[in-house]
Amino acid sequence: MPIFRIIPTIGALLAEAAKNLEQISDSARLDAELMLAFVLDKPRSYLFSHADEQPDEERYDIFTGMVHRRAQGEPLAYITGRREFWSMDLVVNRHTLIPRPDTEVLVEQVLACLDPSPRRLLDLGTGSGAIALALAKERPQDTVVATDVSADALSVARYNASRLELANVEFALGSWFEAVAGQRFDLVASNPPYVAHGDPHLEEDGLPYEPVTALVAGSDGLDAIRLLAGQSPGYLHPGGSLFMEHGYDQAEQVAEILAGAGFMDIRHHRDLAGILRVSSGRWPG
Image (tube, rainbow, N blue to C red; front, side, top):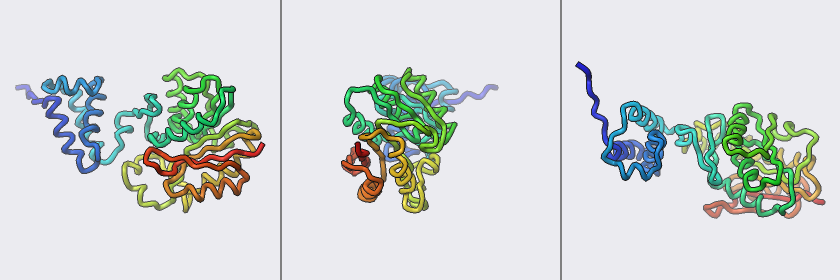
């Protein structure tokens, strides 16, 4: 005789999933809703208006598998393969850092410092393309060059640009400025790795799933920032600017690094929690 499975209703599924995720997530119910909406290919509102309905067996199995992965600590963005940034739906995977809302502060500050004239902008270590694509979206008159040392990450960024139909972005493979040798830009932006090797936070909040090369930069977390500050002058037009994201307690050290490299008008910018998260400097000219 065939074995009939009893599939829980959407409401029951969400309640059980949220309970299973309480130990791993501060937003257990939201995580469950986002995953089920993704599996059903419906908006979250559908879950509430159809709470008494049952998904089919295939979608039920996919959803329970996703809940298991989330319960093991895997970030939601890697499970769904999606992350929203600057109102853009970006594809992400294990080759790319997951874009954070705080990085939108860097985009905001870059946009605020530019006049309407066409510019050449550089995003170093683009990952999923979040920064480069946000700038290209807001400034279609500009050319944005996005680089990454990882061919896999750059492939994701290219795919996101194609999906978003952003034609004013160019991509270059290579380590930092090696990818754009001989070129000059009006502005350089980067969210470089800035976590110190051995930092205990690397074992928390899903970070073990993210590419370590996009997170860790030497014994004090500042190796990449030193490199960018030291080499940027050779790639900036006179009067050009450098914007970098950094750790919550690194603003003073980053300012010293920028000043030591010859930058002027050094400024700090706060993230959504009021923490100094982005620093910028202008090259003389």
